[in-house]
Image 1: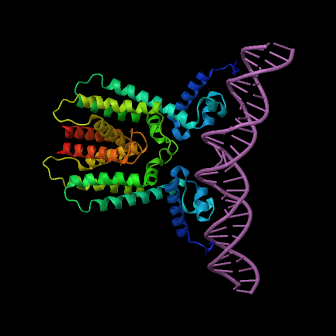
Image 2: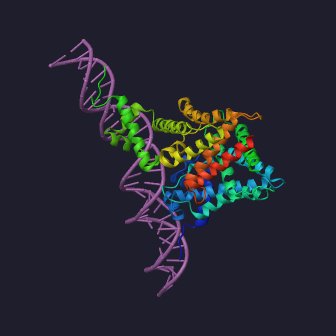
Image 3: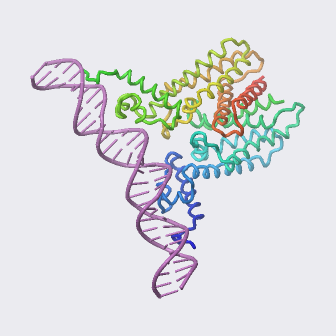
Length: 198
Length: 198
DNA sequence: ACTTATAATTGAACGATGTTCAATACTTTT
DNA sequence: AAAAGTATTGAACATCGTTCAATTATAAGT
């Protein structure tokens, strides 16, 4: 019923392609990624990639989803040992910055990549983003204070803010930016925002 | 001494090129911009553009600088009639969102564009960014409260945060995003951050 | 075992892209 | 009118994403 080149199943090729792509992004950034480079690294031709991925956007989304998963994992393990929600959120911010710096190119790829205009992110991808916001929201829910507030809104505002600092810090749009400064900015944002929430 | 095609001076061509580029970005986004399209819109050839701009990055930086100037102008005029620094900063946030929504593609181009790796933003461009941060910083300085804080750090943290909300909101990375929701998020971030600052 | 059907894989082709630079066309000077 | 000199061209190069007829390798049928 089937006739393949014997060497690898499509599933194997898929994994090889993703692995090679990640390696290219890590070494040279998203802009250096191309179908021909991926193909040559895994010993196939460009055409083969289009049997497995709809197009390049599809491939990049899958790569970025993996990065988001990795990030989520790191964040979860970072707050294992912390009690108070305030320090949890601070740790989350801290770890987010650390991850972004350590995995600069992979992290950058998530936000450098844009779908063609009007095209919405697929639901399976958006899930990965929401899981991150959720980490913060859970902490805000366990805030035991008298004032009531919309935890979903607060989590979105605060986390988007932290992200904004990271983006501008790591793309040279903040002067004299370095990891330490970015961490201070994130600390400032989180500390004051949380203080204001009470 | 010179031999030009009589039609236009280089300065005129420069302006025509920038105008045409802005028009393309407004209509179709930064990704639709190309040397050939610009050239054909102004009745010249791609090669001509390279007599005037170092390369495409240089051209885009000049376009983005204009957008940053426009934004700055809008922000300044938005806070003309406000007294208290808190409401000034809220207005700044509000106006930033409004500008980003209204000039979506031009605004997007500022952050979609990335220089080749390791290449720093030129100083003349960075000035435009700093002028924006400065609007916030000035307001924070006129905060008359007992507590002392680093106004530069605070302005950077808060404004980067506002920007982060805009980016994620306008690039489909926040669920059910629309201008009203983005405005609420920005309000939340500013209000709580400022409350925490005191 | 041989043939036929079928599916995996190829690689050439298409229309783009940014950028360069010898050749050309035009202006000014001699 | 000829020479000098420069603004402008446009073809060329190396890329890019994507498609699809042609090819190859396997499985099924006899």
